[in-house]
Every structure is written in C-alpha cells, then in structure tokens.
Length: 511
Image (tube, rainbow, N blue to C red; front, side):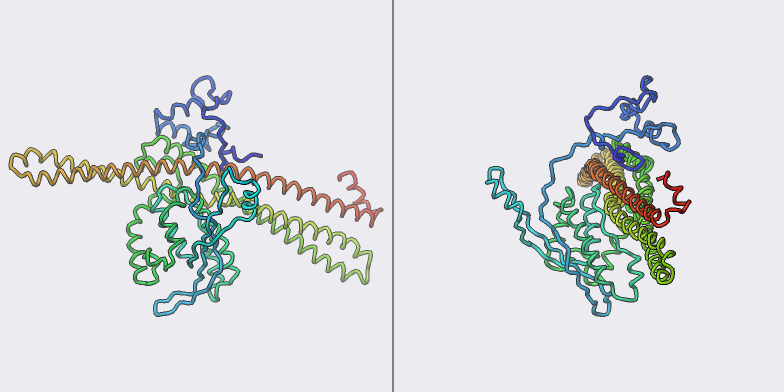
C-alpha cells in the first residue's frame, strides 16, 4: 500500500526523471488527446486546458490520477539549509498574575532557550575525535528569554508578512475547549507542560525552515532580552498601545485576508485574481484537489484511531467486570465461574493489546495530522500570491494613469511654458512606474517561493507518509496476529474446560 503515489489521499510520487511518462494504453495514448498529450500542451492554453483536464475530476471516467505539475513532479531539492541557531527548547512554564486596572487574566509564560550549534568536525579531522564529538556534542545556551503564547502568535503573523508565499509550520492551537473546561479555575500545570512541548517542536521547525529560519523576525524573537512588546506594539504590555496597533493592523489586512484564505483553493480563484502564470494555475488546480482530499480523509483516519482506543478501553472494562463477576460467583459455584474467568482474561489481554495498537497508530499518523494542519498555511500562501497580484494590478493602473496624463498634457504645458509642472509630472510618472515594477517583481518572488515551498512540502509528504504507512501496516498486522492468538488460546481453554460441549466442538473446524 503506497499512498504517496495516489492523489486521492494527497500524496505525490517522487520523480525518477524529468521526462514525461507515456500516456496509459486506452486513454488517448495514440490519438494525441490523452492525459500525456494534454500536459504537453499546457502552456498553449492556460485556462481552457486546465478546466478541461482538472475542472471535474470526480465526474469523468478517467481512472488514472492526473500527473502532478512540474513544480512537484520535477522538483529538485535545493542545497540543504544550514540553520543559524542550534536546538531551541521551551520549558519552565510560569503562571503570571496580572496587576493593575487593565490587567488581564492569569497567563503562562515559557522560557525559550537557544543553544549554540554543535561543532561539526572537518573531513580531515581525526575520526576518533569526530566520533567523540558526535557522541557528546557541546551545546551551550546562547540566549534565554521569556515569552507567552500571544508572542508566538505575533511571531507567526510577522513571518507571514516578511516572507509571503512561504508555507510555515503549523502553530500549536489555542485549545479553546481546554479554556472552557478550566474557565473557573487556573490552568493546570499539565496543560502548560504539554503546551511547552508543542511550542518547542514548533520553534525547532521554524529554525529549520529555509525561509523563516534566517528572517530577522525570528532572530528578534529568540534573542531580544527585553519584552517583545517593545519592538512589536501588537503584543505590548500597555493595553492602549496594543489595542491601537491591533486595530490598525486589522484594518490594513482586512481586504487581503478576506480574499479567499478560507475558500476552496482552485484555478477559479487564481484566474479571478489576475493570475497569468500557467505553472501557478496548474499548481493551484492540483493542490486544491489534494487539499480537499486531505481535509476529508485525515479526520476520518483520526476518528478510526480514536475508535480503536475506545474499543480497547471497552474491552478492558468488560474484562474487569467479568473478572469481578467470576470472583463473586466462584465461592459458591466454581463450575459457573470457570468460563467467566477464561473470557475475562481474554478480554483483558485483547483490550491491552488494542489500546497499545491505538497508541501506536496515534503516533504513526502524526505526519498525516501535520499535513492536514499545513493545508491552511498552503492556502494562505496562495492568498499571498493573489494579494501580490492585486497590488501589482493596482500599481500598474496608477502608473498607466500617470503616464497617460503626462502624454495628454505634455504638448500643452510646453507651449504654455509650465516646465516646472511638466518636470514634476515626469518625476511622478517615473516614480509610479518604478513602484509598478517593484510590485511585479514582488509578485514574481511570491510565485517562485510558492513553487519551491509546495515542492518541499510534497517531498516531505512522500517520505514521511510512506514510512508512516509501513508502521501502520506492520502494527495492525502484528496486533491482528496477537489478538488471534489470544482468542485461539481462550478457545482452547474452553475446550479443555468443556470437552463435551457441542457448540465449542463445532468451532474446531472453523479455526
């Protein structure tokens, strides 16, 4: 079972070559109208071709999944990114009580510690010393700052503005259900420890991210010893400053964030935004279907794992109740208690094994859950592209308007001798044209970043999902074999206890 090569579950195949494979036999292979030929002429007709091939994938009779676009199929991993920082740990949660008139509710703060990078040995070093350094890396803390969860949220917002088009790692959720449960009491220390572990994994993912890792926002967050609100007013300790900054930022970003961030990703949204890149249109169509498949499939997988855990719990509970029943009945009727003891023992062993399977599956589907949460950030990346296209269109319209105004008034101003006004209009036209060029360059950078990021996420998905599926398959196979042995041994125990029972004897040929 290899999910990495099936679009329906969101995987992509690892490329073996840059050439296109031949079309399947019987699907337009000889007539030039099949799958392969349509992909070869994708550049000739951007919109019609992708609507023809990608527009209704669920309703056609084509049993073959569409080939991934070039950004995924022909993805070549860049040089490995060398993180600027070493390991980052988030620990020592501390509950802070607010003071003052505008003090908020109590909140947890966490100690964010940045360690130095381990010294890698040179190739010509002594191998024995290199092995000693690898076994005991010398990590020294270079910075230790205290941050609260609000600061991590602000860091994500700042990174999205700094590197538009980047697919950032999913940030830990705020757990609204836990807040409702603990509304009348203080948040527990177990909750804070769990949140610290999640934030530690999140920070290490940011440090290793090729676009977020070298950003000045992450450097400021990790190394600024003062309160982060001194640099970022939206998380200032002053309530007035914070409300002013948040209100201004909300008004500025409202028009951009509403533009399809939560809508379904597809070709229509990109075309409506003025998309003129065939590669981005193909990528949006393909990723839109994949995100839809992942969004509908991963919750079902998580539900199946939770049902497995619940089944293990109920098997164990039934076994405990039967064990109590056997003890209560055994003092007066040993013959009646004997089969109940056999059944309770089998239920307890099967329940323990099923619960262990649930834990193994829960750990194995972690890459699926991460990709499911990453879908939102990929939609945000395409929304950044649409926002960049909107800014490019507006900047070009303003530049064209200034240029047209200059051309209309150029002759009349020269004849009237208004050279100063003419020079000012020429300067404004040149300035607006430069702004339009800058907006176009920014849109191209966002498109290039999206293509590289989608390819990077796809390569990670193929590698991690394949490994996870192997773990899931082996775990379920082992669990089924052990459960079969448990119930076969229980059946043998019943046969020994009741050799003359016709119902048990009839099962001999079925096992």
